[in-house]
Image 1 (cartoon, rainbow, N blue to C red):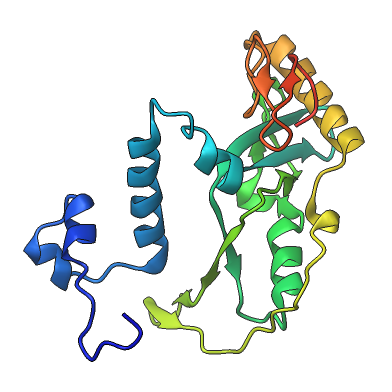
Image 2: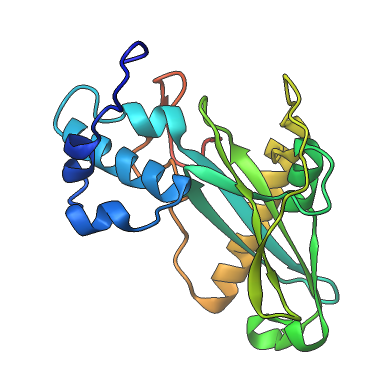
Length: 221
C-alpha cells in the first residue's frame, strides 16, 4: 500500500457500516467514523472470548456532581465514555483544555438548579474522570458557534501537545467519590428513588476492566 501509486479502496469498509454509494459523498467527521467503526467491531466480537476487549481498552467513566450552595442537596450522575470533547479556543495546550473541561460551573440567575423540594437553588456543577481507559480518544472542538453571526466558525489557533500528560489532577479521588455518592444517596432516600447501579458495577460484582479481578457491590472503580 505504501509503494502503490493508486489509492486503496475503502468500499468494503464503508459497506460494512451499512453505507451506500450516496453516503460516500456525504461529509463525516472523524469522531463519527470512529464510533461507527468501534460499534461494528464490538458487534462482531459479541459471543467470542474477546467480547470485552474494546470496553476494557477504550471505555472510561466520568462523574458529574451538582451541589447546592445554600442547602444540603447534591446529585451525581456517572456515565461511560469512549472519547472526550475538549475546548481549544483560548487554550494554550492540552492541559489547559482539561482544566476547562473539569472546572466547576456556577448555576445561578436564570440557570439555577432544580433541587427537588428545595426549589430553584444556586449550585456548582463539576465533571471529573473516575476511570481513564488505557486508550483515550480526544476530540478537539475545532468549530465554535458565534452568537453574533449565528454561524459555526472554525478555530484555527494552535494547541500544544506534551509528550506525556498527567491526568491525576482531573481524576476524582476515592474520598471525593465516596462523599459525592453518600450525598447523592441521602438525596435519593429523601425523594424515594432507588439506589443506582454505577457504571462498571452490577449487583453481583463486575470484572475489573484492568486487572480482570472481581469487584463486589459498592467497590471502587
